[in-house]
Image (cartoon, rainbow, N blue to C red; front, side, top):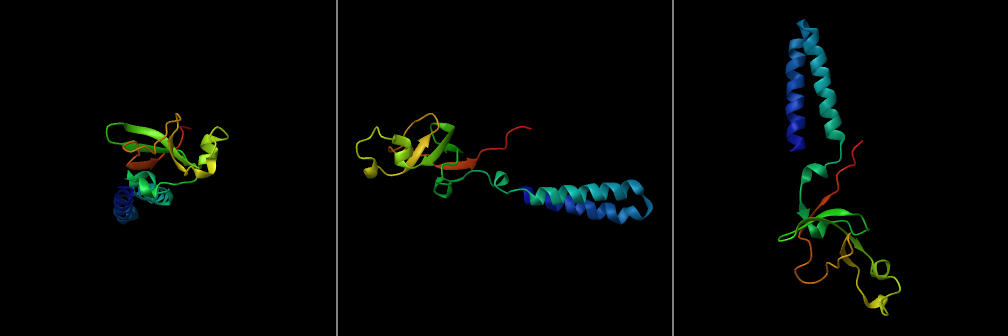
Length: 125
């Protein structure tokens, strides 16, 4: 999606540049379009890639948007068992790292695992 927009902006910039020999407005517009295309092309593609299979999600504790049929969208993160359970589990070393919802729900049970994920959007400025 973003790649398509970059291409369209670049095409418009070329068109405006062709008109620019006799029109200052067209020259300025062409320059702005080129700048917008360069800015968009330099941004991380994560946002434009949409939902991805959960197998490709980061497993370093990063909070993500997660999706599971029947549940919808929620936030989750993959964390090590000792971080999640602390000292309250007698055999922490026997517990595998797993996905948890950010409200503390264990997502390792059958049917609880998210199927897709997406990075969180940037916070408003």
